Every structure is written in C-alpha cells, then in structure tokens.
Length: 70
Image 1 (cartoon, rainbow, N blue to C red):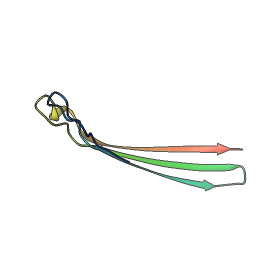
Image 2: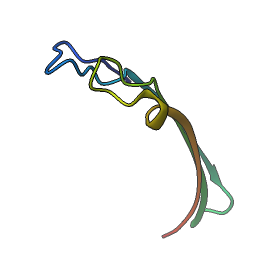
Image 3: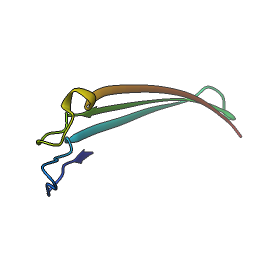
Image 4: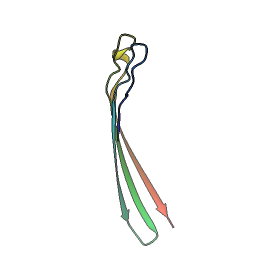
C-alpha cells in the first residue's frame, strides 16, 4: 500500500507512507493450522516550514504468530 498527501496546508506536508503485508499458513493436522504474518511500514519525514522532521518518519516491522484449531 502507498499513501501520499495531495494537498499541503499551513506550510505542513505529511510524509509519504508505504506498507507491505505477507502471511503464511501451515496445516499441521486436519484441525490445527499454524499462521505467521509479517507487516512492514515505512514513513518518510514530514516536510514544510511548520513540520518537525526530526520527530517524524521511521520504519516498523511486526511479526505476529497465530494458531487456529477447528
């Protein structure tokens, strides 16, 4: 996913943002499923006169395991 501002207001421009998600599902038994999901996100720094670029932007990664039993 890509997110970008199309309008600037009061000399402030939010940073662009990109994210990606991927998942894996493994059937351990007919009733038990093991799952793993990876979420990545990167946000560029804010811009403009009224922005605080040093306090914005960054990269995050989340890894989420899961179990499903039916």
